[in-house]
Picture 1 (tube, rainbow, N blue to C red):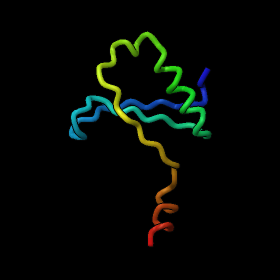
Picture 2: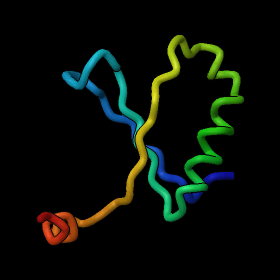
Picture 3: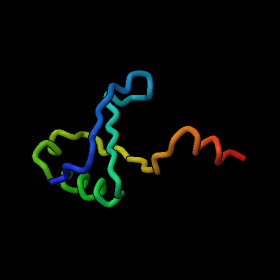
Picture 4: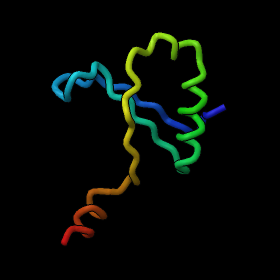
Length: 70
């Protein structure tokens, strides 16, 4: 259902108390939101002890980031 949403899972060693970092990519933000809402209602969610916040942003190239610096 969410084939356009790319999910990336990496170890979060040294980035706090979390074991894994999940990064989702899609051309449209609402697709990520819909995917996360669907995942929250899955049976695997029953094994989640702590619901952690997530952060969103726009993917930019390094050149665009540098060009936007003051």
